[in-house]
Each structure stands twice: as C-alpha cells, then as structure tokens.
Length: 293
Image (cartoon, rainbow, N blue to C red; front, side):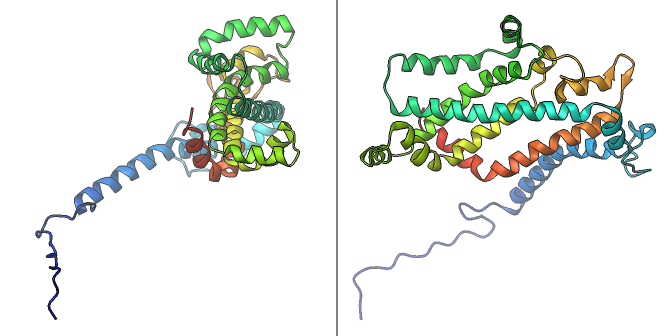
C-alpha cells in the first residue's frame, strides 16, 4: 500500500555534538562543581560557629575542632549569664510583632485589593516610600518619638518600631496575593449574607495561607534578628534582647568566643523552626504576591 504522506527523515546529531537541551559532560561537571563550592561556602560559617561552640576557651581561635569537645560553653551561658531573660524578651517581642504584623498586613492588603477609597493610591505610595529609608536615617527620629511616648526600654516600643519595618513590605505582598483570588468568592459570600469582615475571615484567609506564611516569617525574622533599634532602645540586662545581649560578650579587651558562639547557635534554632514550619508556603506565597502590584 502506497501512502501519499512522505515520511520525514529522522535527523541524527553528528557524533560528538550534544543534542539541544542536553549539557555536555564537561558543562555538567562544571555546574556540579560550582554548586558544591556554593553549598560549602554557605554552610561553612554556620558549621564553624557550631564547632567553635563545642571547644574549650583555650582552643576557641584554633582549628582543633574535635579536640576536647565539651558543652561547657552552653552550661556557662545558661547558668552564669542572663541569656534566658534575653531569649524571653526577644521571643515576646518577635511573637507580638509576628501576630500584629500578619493581622495589619493582611487587612491592609485586602482593603487595598478589594475596595476603592480616597487616598488609596497615596497609601500605597506611602507604604512603598517607607522602604527607601535606611536604619541610620530613621533611628534618631524614631528614638525621639519613642522617648516622647515613654516607650523607651519598653517592649511595646520595639514592637511598634518593627511593625513600621515589616508591615509596608508585607502589605504590598498581601495585596498582590489577594489580587490573585477571584472576586467571585467575595460576591458569593455577600450572597450568603456575610459581612465584608465575615467574607475576609471565613472565605479569603483560608485561601491566603501561603501569603500569610511569608508575612509571618518575614515579620518574625525582622524582629528576631534586628540589632540597631534593639541596642539603641533597650538598656539593662533585664530589658535587653538577644541582639543587645550578644554585645556583652565583646569588649575592648577581647571577645568571649565560647559563650558567644553557643548563644549564636541557640539563637538560630527558633529562626530555623519558623522557617521549617513556613517553607512549604514560602515559594508559593512570594511568587503569587509578585504577580500583581
């Protein structure tokens, strides 16, 4: 049987020439070597700090990582310093910042995404412009404001300060995330007799979990790892956060590497736990929040 359609000849790549979309062995080896170097570069400082925290003071600045391994630095840190007080202060401030930051950013982003009101464009520009100022420019005026309000040496002052950092960025991101949720869901809630607040809390928020996870993570990290405001606004061992407390291990005569590295390891644990809790939502939330501005 003769067919009218001619078969197309199958093209074969010339020997030694890789097919399109496939890397040559040399390129693959170079890529893997680059990834290995990048991974080692990223992990090395963390591993160095952890191993240093397990060394006695006499070996703190040497490379003898596995000689006389001890947990003495951790026991001295918890027993002889106010570390647990600093940890509790940081946990309180970071927790309040996270809860309030998520609530304010989510409600702000939803309002800007769904409603039209006077000053909407000005509000969004204000949120954007506030991200342009560095800490060095803002720390003095914010210090004066907090002093006038009597909030220096007060956790509430730091919480308010951290909210001014976290909320503008998170509100923009949440606005972009809410833009991706169909308006028909809001309309169906109104048909069922829900108020705007009921629609927001019962229908929209459950769909916004990835965006909320990113907002919570960013708010927590902002408050947990910040140094400048915490050092300027809080004094006294009973009021210091972890950022200010770590500075107690460094003075003009030297540094106490053992307690400081042990404290650094313990400080990283809550941040790692929050990241592990939110990681499955991070990529989805950040990419969805960047779709529309």
